[in-house]
Length: 139
Image 1 (tube, helix red, strand yellow):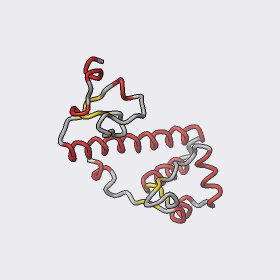
Image 2 (cartoon, one colour):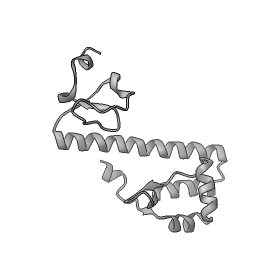
Image 3 (cartoon, helix red, strand yellow):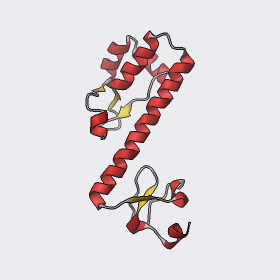
Image 4 (cartoon, helix red, strand yellow):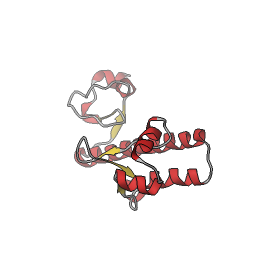
């Protein structure tokens, strides 16, 4: 499902983003810090970063349409939320493929950053059936 959602999306390095958006590097990072452009995604190392092409295109379309800064900030927030949603969905899918188990949402552990008893945790705070404790079931 995730591959279908982002099938045509390319990861654009900074030079490509600058070319598509028609701005300089310092302007791009100023817009990122002001919430008017999405943050880059880290790829392959701590230094390498890129932007999903669909996000760059959506922001460019909003600018061309004459959207206000407030509307573009809302768009950036929605785009970041979509990233988190897709990341969580991917994490659940990978957990299910690897362990062949159905994830159970545990409210007691959803807000805590600790790992489960078996050390398995995904981004949504889900725990697998085999790693639930008696306290989780009672909650």
